[in-house]
Image 1 (cartoon, rainbow, N blue to C red):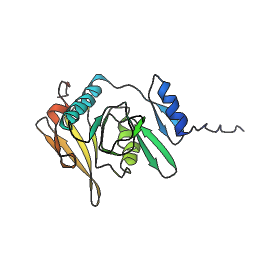
Image 2: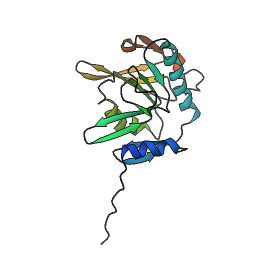
Image 3: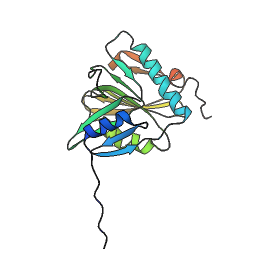
Image 4: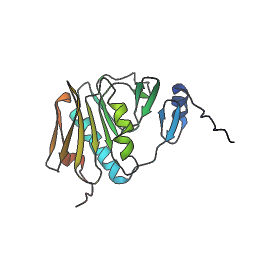
Length: 190
């Protein structure tokens, strides 16, 4: 009879130190580290467009848009997670020496075949536990479609926004996000 090997868990401090010197990105789930794969050009165009649109609208305001190099720390009961969302907006920033942010107001993930289940499952469930989070946006990479999970008094509601003429209202940040900007330069499926 064989005996199952136990996992070697690492601390969040060990993870953060290793991530500083790593040429690759890794996400951290309660002591277990997972390598991230790179995205296709289409995926990166949508994510970059989101960052540009949000960053321009937040200029000279206290909130800041971050790209996929900024980790979000999520403190769940029993363990900590670190994810790299495609884009995020934070209004109460951690110290500029920190490697992560704790209080995003908005998180955006661009879906892919390999990330869809995680982005709409495990990550979404974790993101929605963040007390500061008002919006979780999930963007399709091949069609102008964004699912918005918006915090209300009774919990998060799901909204579907489609079409290049569509503009997503984001009163929580006093701005709007046009899908035409989000999908600028992206070859869309017919």
